[in-house]
Image (cartoon, rainbow, N blue to C red):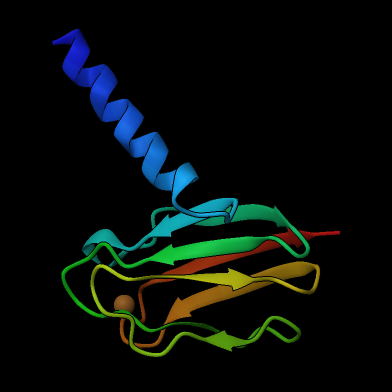
Length: 106
Ligand SMILES: [Cu+2]
């Protein structure tokens, strides 16, 4: 039992850290972001991973950090680099209840 738990832990850690250079990974399972907010440094990236069963369209209209990933198919991920300091409102254009904040510091 202990061996299984440890093995699972290694896989999860390897997936989120090894496979991506970004500092934070945001999941989208069940049509919700896995975090209400994340804090990163200016120039760092956030990985938006669509591990849901439906497409999502992650975007932001916050000045200086505007982006629009378009329709993101299940199983795909995209890194977004944040260039300006400040609070960035991130939403899904398809599901209005999906909202989160990326807090970018200098
Ligand atoms: Cu969505």
